[in-house]
Structures are given as structure tokens and as C-alpha cells.
Amino acid sequence: MLRSGAVQQEMRVKKFKNNEYVLGEGVWVRNPFSSSRPLDINSLAKPDLSLLLANESANVRTNHMNMEDSSDLYMDNVVIASDGYDWERRQFVLSELSNKKVKTIGINGSLAKWLMVGEKATVKKTMTFYLANNPYQECMSFLPRSHKYYPNLVASTRTNPRFLSSYKTPPYLYVPTPDYDYCGVGSEDVGSTLDDYRNPICAAISFALKRGAKRILLLCCDESFQESRPGSVAMPNGLHQYPQQIKCQRIVDKQLFWARKAGVQIGDCSSGIYLENAEYIKIDDVGKFLDKDNNG
Image (cartoon, rainbow, N blue to C red; front, side, top):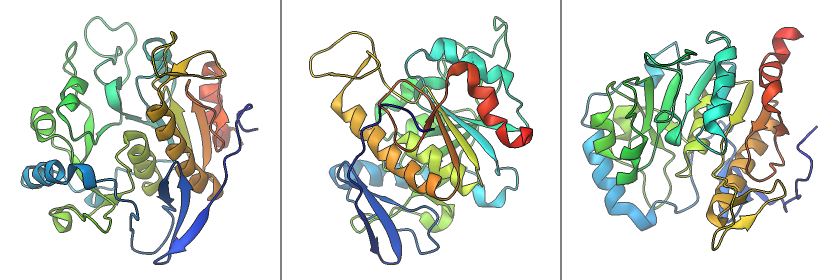
């Protein structure tokens, strides 16, 4: 059963250059399972072309790993974890999951707020990957301060270069899917593209799907807050978000549309808007959801 309370959005699908796209909040979201050459028909890079060019020029010259060369990057069950509402408490559910059966991709502030490493941690747990694609200086706030744990890094070529140089392990670099306005720098040296729509959740979903994910759970993938703030929007769950955050989640939902259509099981244990293409999973049922296939 999909999450109750979802408002059905108008579905617009079109084909172009042998790719399929669905429209979500003014952004055309590509079918990632298409066998055609990937093409982003949006112009999401246009406002920051000079910044993205500078970032890529710096990053492609650094020491990095090619994810296409590693056989260890394939995964069936994936948790994409952000630092949304109640992250400090909910993250401990990950300690109950097998590292072998379930891979974890951390995004946004989840690594900086990771409480399951270090001498003072009463519960121990590692991330499989941390993924970053923020091109701005604010990306530096995602580096850990209270611990020295740095999991394997997956990063866009457009990520803030200072963040990459400060991270303690070389990244697996990817190139965002090129569009008509901007195709990137040094893409032939990196070798892998992901549909990321300048959104780390989308990038993590694209990465998981490209690595064979059959089941994906979104954990705390929201930016909700309790109190009403100027310009914020009240949601049915009693929390609030800003319109831009809601727009981003609807783009994510359209990416999940393609995944669900391809038979990938999608769960959401977050506190954002209702997603049409995900099953709502209670925190106590996370392990059960991710172990469904193993239980037959």
C-alpha cells in the first residue's frame, strides 16, 4: 500500500532522443533505465555555469577513483539517509541492519551528525558511502567535526573543490547527466554519469539504481521542522517545510515513479510530503521492509 494522504499529481510523459521523461514541478525527470544515451533536457546548470565550470576544472585534475572499475559497488538493498526530522534518534535503526545485506548511502548533514562512531559511541555502525554534490561553500558544513570517520565518498565533479580536498579519502567521481547548455569538463576521464538534478537524494537514487538496487528506503530524507516560520507550508503530519523543499521532494517522487515502474520496491521513513511512489514505512518496520525478499 502506498502512503495514505498522497495527492495525485498530473502525469505528463514524453519521449525525446529515445529517452523517456516525466514532468515534475517544471523539471523533466528522465527514465534512468533507458538504453539510450543519457540526456538532461532541463537547463538546471545555467544560473551557475561559471561556478560549475571552475569546480569541475579543479576536481577532474585531482586523485579520484573510477566507480566503473570497481566490482564492489553493486547492491540489492539500499538505505539513503539524510539528516531530516528526528535524524538523531532514527539513525540508530541502521545499527540493526546487516552491512552485507543492506548498503547505506549518507547525504547532506547525516555524516556530520553520525553518532555511531568514536570512543563515546555506545552503538557502532558504518556507512557504505557518503555522497556529495553541493557546489557551494556550504558543503563544508557537511564535513564531520565531532568524529574523524570518513566513509567511501561518491561525489559529483561539480562538488565544492574545497570539500573534496578536505575529505580524507579520494572520491568516486561521477558526471551529472549532460544537457544542451552544459555537458561538463573531463567527463571522458570520469566515465560514469548520474541523473542528479542538483539534488543529493536524486543522485543517491540514481547511483543505487545504476548499481542494481532492488529495494530502496529513504530515511529522514526531508527538511521538516515543527514550528511555523514565515513562508513555510504546513503539511498533513503537522510539520512544516518551505515550498522549495517540497518542490525538490516532488522531483524525487517522479524519479521514484520510474524505479517503481521497473519493479524496484520503494519505502519512505521520512517526514516530508506524501510521496505517490513510495510505501510509508514506520521506524519499527524498517528492518522488515528491507528483509522482505530474504523472508520470501
